[in-house]
Image (tube, rainbow, N blue to C red; front, top):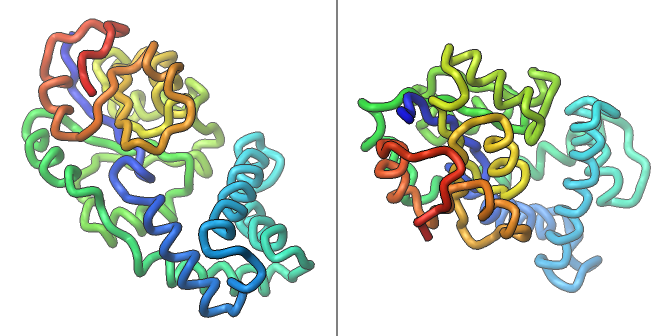
Length: 243
């Protein structure tokens, strides 16, 4: 099997979302005078992530739009009613601290450089084009990708096969000629495999549901392992020898 393109997840795959989220929320809560309501920044961050996951599930199911889920994250976290303008203003202040902490993982640029001439590259994210194009542009990566597709505009999100098939269609390639690299065992690894792509799970040690991904995906612990994998004549579904 020849892999002609690599499609990438963004958060916690290319971009160190977990660290930026933690540092950004700590700085934001300090600036807002809200740390006293929690037993430290870590407790606040756990609560923020729980709310984020719950509100994102509403967005993924089509119950609310992207902006509404963002506003509702803020309202639930603060535990009070806010107008849309108030919720937007609070979230924008958070974003300023969050963006100040943005960084790539150190293995990202070397992997992209090695694969630049041999493979086409695209992004598929469960976010919005506005958010992810801004992020990729700020991090100096946007020009490396032929296309960036996101759930908010597609109307379908990972792990649904339709999201993965949409990016294959945008590249003009069948799924078996496309690799997908992501950090989430179910949303990324299982979803890509079930769509017929070469599924590559980058396990950075933060995943909570590993067994499912280990069955269907090629597990790597660093992107330095990726070039050998996508250049090899690797049978889809073969057990991983990485990590």
